[in-house]
Image 1: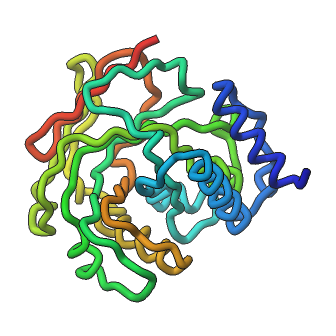
Image 2: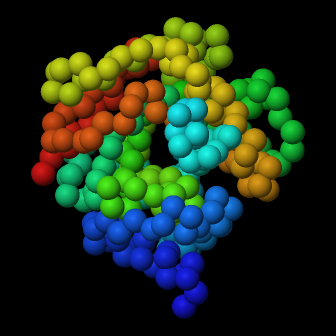
Amino acid sequence: MRREDDLLVRLHDAAQAVHALPSLESQAFDLPKGYALQREALRRRQAGGEQLSGWKVAFAGRAAQERFGLDEPVLGGLTDAMAVEPGSAVAVERLIQPKLEIELAFVLGRSLAPGFYSDEDILAAVSGIAPAFDIADCRWQGWRFGVGAFLADNAAAGLYCLGPRVGFSPDQLPHVNYRLECDGVACGEGNVLAREDTPVSNLCWLVRRLLADGQCVEAGHVVLSGSLLAPLDIRPGEYRLHMLGTELALVFHR
């Protein structure tokens, strides 16, 4: 078995067994190889019956990019098997070493084929936005990895949960604030544009990156546009995200 095939089997088995793998040397796989492994792993998931439902942005901030010698973010794929219903309960034991990320999700209303699109073109393809939880779950022990291994792990895409969708207009973004609570205690708050990597810039980067790789972006796909707060280690409790005049809640339990 080729080294790459062996790695994909090990990652798949680690997810099934809910067990972290020993970290690889940081240079074991480079960025192009990591993306190739990610695409193959997603192909295998789809062959097994899962449907591609969207994409996530990772390493959107400058600090994370500098740490891995990058000059742009990276991305991972989402499937319908990763989706969690709002208000549901998630057993922590089904995850390896999960972290909670707070995101603004964009939902595409029409498909985009490879070609050039301005920011305005991309935003015009968005039909709605929603508060979202990205439940990141890394299969590398201690969240230690090189960028290629991180991509092979599908950018730590574990589960995700979308709140109520609202219609989208770029004019509303400066007014989108958020507040996260755990068991009624505030964990963080802010405005979605009060950061160097805004949700819009991350969305446009991801769409262009996919199209440049020859990947169509489909109507109905969700884009998780980057964490608005530093990722939180998940502990049992009820997490509530207030955003867009709506509320998204999930309970994590043992």
